[in-house]
Length: 120
Image (cartoon, rainbow, N blue to C red; front, side, top):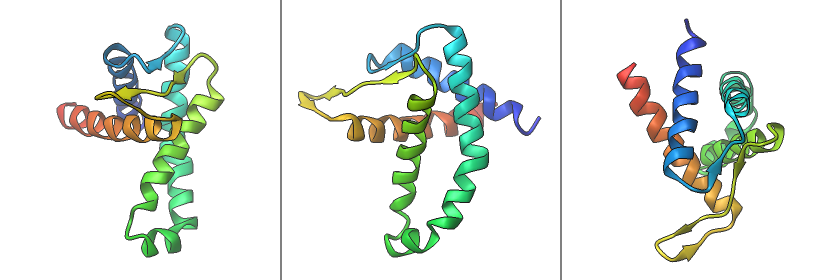
């Protein structure tokens, strides 16, 4: 049950983001499931290890480096899962490159996951 709830929340988050934002896309339901499992496993296994390894940098930057870790993990999901893509976005007439697009999507994923986690 500890792994089922994050899987459901991540899957719903990716599904809603792909529906709402044209920059997030996946090919089919298998790709969505694979991206969900990959994102959940990276957040549950790799992220705590990276937080411990980069703790001195995170302390010096007053916690802002954790945002970079979130972006790196999201980029890793797009790299590992073929068919799952987050493209560069245009927001309010300003074109963002892939890094800032991943940064914005990462923040939106965090908001969606906290909201859906609260509901479930």
